[in-house]
Image (tube, helix red, strand yellow):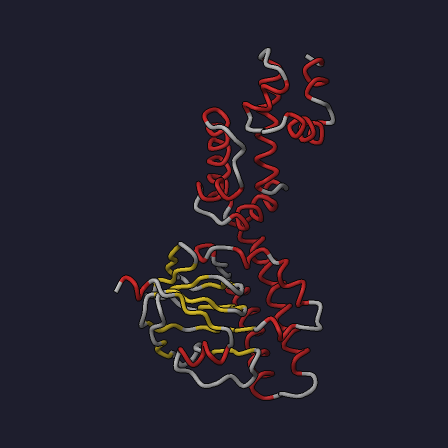
Length: 300
């Protein structure tokens, strides 16, 4: 039984994925939309873990009892939400449940020849964990629902020379809205995010006091149960710098403290802060302060 649960099934085509759900073949081989808003359907169980080689955008409009697992985290969709899964991500779900909402599946080949083929990878939310789902206000939900409806109408009723351009335009509009709404979510959840900022500050203080080496963004994100992408995007919105810059800022603070209050050489300070080569420390210090470590020390 345990061996079966560890089997990872990969779906290379949209048709294969829909067949596994017991759903009809897609009207278009490279794009599909599933609409469960009005008529809920029971989705059959899939293997505990599977990988899609195409993009998936899910918009859940109601509370789910199913717990979805994406990567290493489960998420309960208590109020519905919008989330994004990039090709190659591992997804698992507990079986047998129903839900209302929309799902769009987009094969990367559908975007070939359009600027979105390259631009789509630049949206940070493809790398967010599923517990970082985008929660929408009523007005935002209406805007997103309108896009799904236009996309559905185009896919089901108007296949012609312009259909692909229209559908890609709707995908790009959906991604643009999601980008805007995520930035709103970072701002409207300031009390929660403020607690995260305080925790980050304490974590970095403790790390540089007790550990050797420079902490990674991955490590820092794990300490506050966020994905690296979500953490960096949240920090950009709230404090104007990403997680890597935050680490460097704290590191420079510690370096200034050691340079101004101890007799350690620059090389010794560099080693204590986790740098393998003192030159790398000096280069970063000057880039952040416009002074070399020696010049900074002389100023005291």
